[in-house]
Length: 462
Image 1 (cartoon, one colour):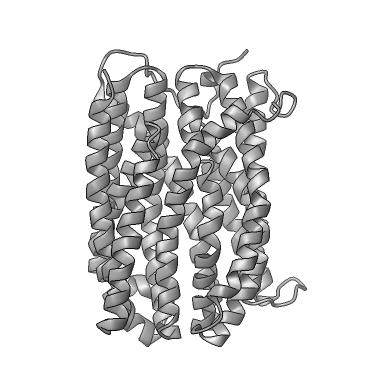
Image 2: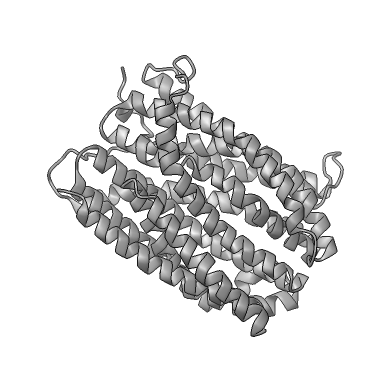
């Protein structure tokens, strides 16, 4: 049976070596982190392209895409979060050189995806009217409902993509993930051009056309990763579908024990910004559009530490699986340093050139004036956002998912959001108040998670 280490796209990690070579370890981490980070950027680019291409339809369309994503992504990303445990179990099996076990974990994750997709779709369908009714601009509400109703059909492909992505990352195959996201952006761009504006004989669907393009792109991404996983398994003499295991309830329970807290953490974080979007929707269309653009900018920079976070989880898991606990600690701290360093650069960019960044999205003078001020607040939390994100991934590599979930709950929902709402509506700070509350929450979350990683990494026996 062919070893996956002979595959040209597979990263080589010598976890079993007792010799400490920080330079080689950093290069190995970068070889994993850079393609994954590029994949995350590709993921966010799809959303940004959607916002830009509906921007010609006016502030209500921009706001509707932002509000629609706020409604949809919290529950759908919970589904993806359920599969985050694959980072831990697949990478540990790979580090222990048990390659068949990697395949068995993937199959159980697919059973979870198939079971949860219909429930998530039903939840989104029932819940969306609650967030688009009273207090929301009527035109924004109409656009949002049509957008979400179509976007919902991409839930199963999204979860299939998420599971196969975690599997490929866990076995060190990161280039296919990057290829899938970059090429999917081209599919999405073409789909937006066709469906939003009515090209090539198709009717002009406006905001709902953007949602349709996203669904097509997700189907494409899932198909690409399934193909690469099939090719990888075939290359080592173990065809993916010829040896598809039946449900293993012990493995499913273990994945859910890791994934449910991770999923709730994703939901708590995404829903916190979604709740801020819903609050912004109760101001006016200009404030909502400004909020959506600022959130898009912040989310775009966040994609890099999110990719580094996934790399940290895999690198820590590889080392733990190989029995090299000291290397696991070093990998976690190296990843945190990379995430913080990158976000320091983006903070300087937001401070130095806020207006040119805003002009990428819109030329509306009202949005530009408000957006420059909001981007300065966004710059204030960049470093802390990077630190908390990467620390979460490193902790996941140690099978620690509950503490980050509880920290996010307390930071956002018990502190940041109530404070932001109070400053926004009671103190009349408007959008600035919302973002100030979120910034203070992120600072607290980052400090707590860094301390937790330090304690957890020191507790791992050498």
